[in-house]
Image 1 (cartoon, rainbow, N blue to C red):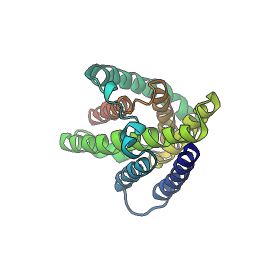
Image 2: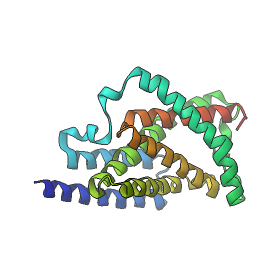
Image 3: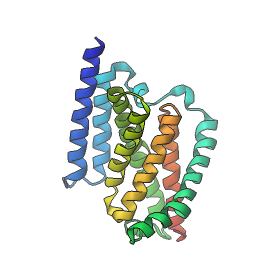
Image 4: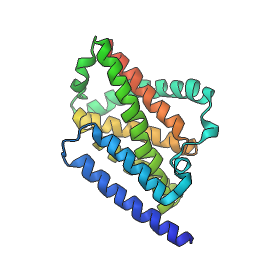
Length: 221
């Protein structure tokens, strides 16, 4: 029975990676809808290999969804990560690549409160929830199921999907892709250290983006 479940998980995982790659890397004209489509795909894939416990298998652990964890620890963690990103990673990566991060796609937010608010709604639904469910909740957990939790497997898991995560941010240029990949790796490490606490990572991701977009709105980033 275990070998049958393992085979099913492996096949579904491989198919999900394949379909995700097609949706991300081929211009199908879907735009932001790509994330929502993949989120639905991941829910279906999770249900196929975990049945009724598919939400738990993604990391939605009810016992860890505490107010202290989500409203205090996660925002503080997000702010620390953003400071590391802004004042350490950005200068180092920019010097390495020789080109600045391209955040021109977010220029409409600057000084425009209505666009900022609508962007934050989109960010929380697509990036915070969608990307975390896809990359941490599904890809990372299924990679661990297929390849185990040895030190080598954990490192490979973090690096592989950090590269994948960075690549989908190509619109930010080479520097932006590397920075996004590094940020994804940090969140992935948090996911591992927090024992697959997806709620925590969703809030951390959402708050990082929230702080960053407020900075863009105020023209300080």
